[in-house]
Image (cartoon, rainbow, N blue to C red):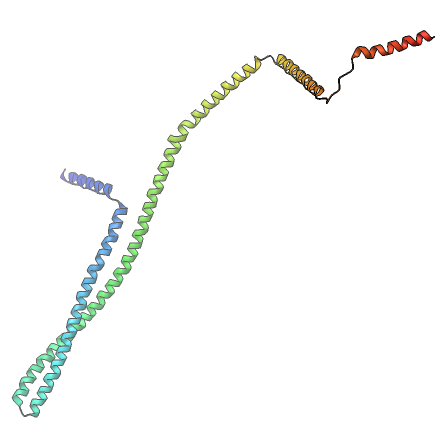
Length: 245
């Protein structure tokens, strides 16, 4: 029972952690962590370099002491002071031993410094690689979020904004159009087309007569001769001819 409870708690903790994890934020934090390690590494390398510098200075001092003591030993021997020569010789031996130890330490320090520089170069290459990968992943994540947002918007627009009402609105417009066409057809059928045509023809004739009257008043059209005068002329002529016979 206890094992099952621990397993359930671990699964719950894992689910909680995975639910609050944001890969984009974690990658950005990783980039900051990598950049924060550079100053610390530079500080460590500076300490190694400082140790090399210190050992080099000590080495130069030991070499100077060895040269001076060597000269003193030789001077004491030449002066016949073997006692002083022995004392200087003892100190000279100690300085030589210290110089040998210092040279060994200096060699180790130089190797450590070179190794530190190589480690830094490798770290910087790896840091740049991981930083570039993280930046690319962050850009991809942001692009994916934007694409998801656009997809959600388009889906909601297609489903809720258009498709759900498109067919219904088309049907309503078609129904209104059909009703109005039917009303128009009924109205046209109820009109007396023949009477309307007669009235239109009468109005046209009346208009033509009015135009003729205006033309006659303006002298653009001569008045027609009376029909009675024209008919009487021939009758009188015919009558006169009969009388002569």
